[in-house]
Length: 337
Image (cartoon, rainbow, N blue to C red; front, side):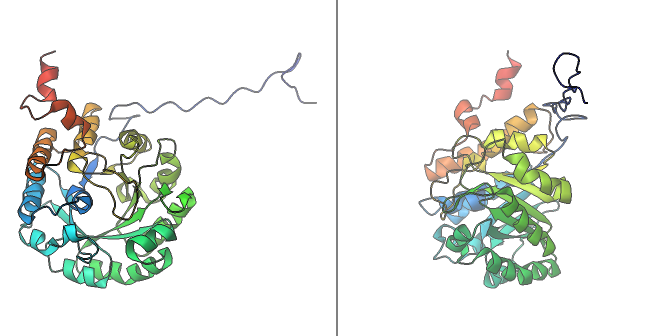
């Protein structure tokens, strides 16, 4: 007769909890380096009410490159009728020079979009689908299966042209039309994208409903299967949890995070989706815990302030709100304490 927890019995020892991840970069802690993928020029500006002049878009991209960002999603080759804010995609790309170590990305929805993108300096093609049929239908007028059938032609064509391919799984944490999304739904779409030959899959919290507890369930199995270099996370800050979600992703080994300068963004096909995780806020966190990015935080902040001055739109970055438009930086303040 086995012993129980009563008199004369010995209680089974409780399992020892796993040691917590140190909130610093290094052994037993967070990744030593993180790729910050800048999506503001595309995902940010597509949701602006007014058209941002081409010259301002080009100026923004150049400033972000000067700040050290090496992966920048520049624009989208969708129909100008669908997203008029990005109707000047060809003109923006034409004004950019190819630079060693810098990858300009273009979002494409179909064969015509790919054809347009391949005439430019875009080194990466981004294909986008979703975890639910309802969202995908409203976004690109296709079901998930139909979109993946299209990508079975587009991904090889892009790779044959020497382009890297990224696949987006939008609404991976929740859908504005179908509600909660099971992690297995996102996993299934991601696996099918990898089967088509994409180099990287980005899991999107398109409407900003994710919480830190969900991140390991959605991203963890894919990070374990495909490696940290092939899975990226894309968080919106609709409910103020984007930075916490980014930290949760770092704690499970993620090394690629999307962000948008000034917290620009939203999604025209996702009601209630507000801005992306601000690049400045993400950099402040990463640098604060010792993670290398190769990006100059103050230079990114300067680029966001310049765009805000040109458009008259206030940035949605807490870092920018804290530092204002003064030349005094947080680094200066901490140095004087």
